[in-house]
Image (cartoon, rainbow, N blue to C red; front, side, top):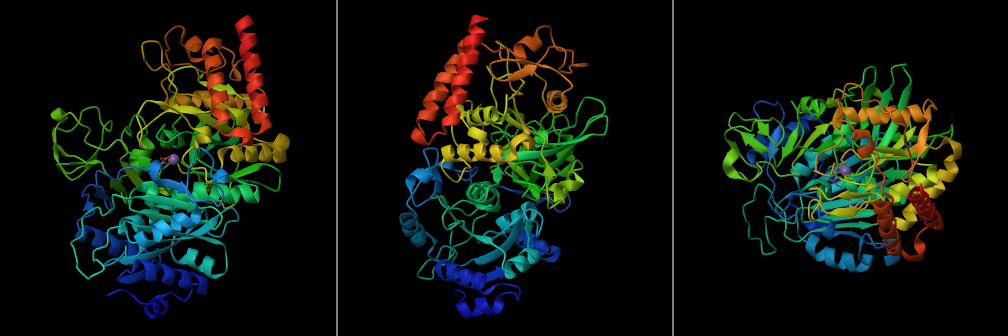
Length: 612
Ligand code: OXD
Ligand code: MN
C-alpha cells in the first residue's frame, strides 16, 4: 500500500514547514513508498535503524568494535560514477567542457519515469541536515529523501542531521532539496513483490544537479558521494554555484590547525585529488619536535571573508568518509584509533574473529579472511581482500586530533592554501606561488595520477584543477575567474598559496620523500616563509627552499635527495606549458586573461632557466 497525502501530512513533525511537507508529499506521490519516516537524529532512532539493517542482512555487526558494522556493496556499485554525473544548467556553456551536461527539462523527463514507483515496498526517509554547525552563518541546510537505511545512518555521521536542522528549516532558513533512490523497488506496478537484496541498486545510474533550481536528484547507486547527497553533490557541486553567486568559496580542501613551537597558531587548507592521502594529512602527526597539528576538516572547506578582511573556513561535514586501504598505525594512527567504535565499514574484509582488515592495515595479512565480495580469501588469492575504494564512515570528533574549533560557526582564519597532486616527476616537494594570481594558475593547472576513488585507468595522468574536476557545479573557467575575484577582494589579507607533491620518484621509481608525518617539514617551511623567517629561491614553479632551510634533520636522506626533490627541468616544464596551453584551449574564450598572462610568465621563467 503506498502512503497517501493525508497520511504524510498527519505524520509530519510539527516543526516541518508547509513547503517542506508539500515537497515530501510530491516526491512520495511520485516514488510511491509504503511509508514516510521523518528522521529526528536521536540515538534511539539510530539504534532502531541499525537493528533493522542487521535483521535485513545489510549490516554485519563487528564484535570487536562496539556500534560498528561491515557492509558489502554490489560489485558494480563501488565508487562515484563521474560518467553518470550531470550538471543540468539551462545553458550548456554554464556546465563547461569538464562536466557532463544535460538540458534540465530533458533530464527531468528522463528521471521522472525512473523515479515513478522507485520506492514501492520501501520506506521513504526524510533527512533534514545542516552542512556546518547548526545555525552558523557559513552553514547551509538541506533535506535528503532516500529509500536507503545505509544512507540515513551514514548521513547521521557525515552531517548534523535531525530535529534541530528541521527546526531551522521550519523557521524559514534556506534549504536545498535532494532526492535519492537506490532504484530497486520491492513491488512492481502490478503489485508483485520481490525479496530485497543486501545492496539494492540499479544498473542505470544518474547523479544529477540543477544549478538554477538548486536541487539534486540521484538514481540507482547507494555508494558514497552518489548517495550521501550532503557531501559532493551539495557541499561541492551545488555549493560552488551558491558560492559563485554570493561571493564565497566551496572547496575540495581539508582544514588544519597548526601550532608552532613558539605557540603561534596557523590554519591551512589543502586541495588534493581523491585518494591522495588527504585524510592522512588531515590527521598528521608531525615528526618534527614542538609542532602540533589538529584536524578541522578532512575533505571540504567552505570559506568566506570575515569582518577583519581575512578568509575564514568551516568544515561543512560532521564525519570522515575515508579510504580504508593503506590506513595503518604507521600511516595514520589517529584514524585507526578513531575507528574502534561506532564506525560503518564498506567493502573491507572480515576477519575470522569478527574484525575488519584491509590491505596495508598490518604488514602481515591474516591467514584467512572473507573478502569484500563475501568470498573466502587467503594471501595466495591473488586479489585484494578489500576494494581499493573501500571506506570507513566515522564521526569527526572520534578522532583524537580534532580541533576544538571544528564546531566554531565562524570558522578559522586561513594563512596558507596548499595545492597537491600525485606526480612522479616534475613537480617539486614544495614551492611558493609568487602571488595570489600565480597561485590560482597553479591550482588551475594541477594534474595528478588517477586513483581508485573514481572510474578510470589507475596511474594515468589527469588534469584536476583545484582538485575540483568532478565537483565544480559550473563552468571551470568561470570558477577560475571567481577565484581571481575573491583574491582581489582579499587583497593583502589573502592566504599564501603553495604547491606540494609528496609523491615524487627517482629514475628507478623509488619515492624520494618519506611522506606522512614528515610532510610537516614542508609545511614548516611554508609557515617560516609567511613569517619572513627564511629566504627562497625564485624558480620555474615558484619560490623553492634554499638548501638547508628545509628541515630534514633525523631523516637520513641519501645524498642528492634535495636536488632530486627540487629538480626543475626546463625541457619537461616546457612540455607541461604546452599541455597547459592545449588544456586552456578547451575552455575557449571563457579562460580569464590573467591565466594566459600567468602562462606567459611561466614560459619566461622556463626560458630564463634554459639560459642560466
Ligand atoms: C572522496 C573523493 O570520497 O574525493 O572524498 O572521492
Ligand atoms: Mn574528496
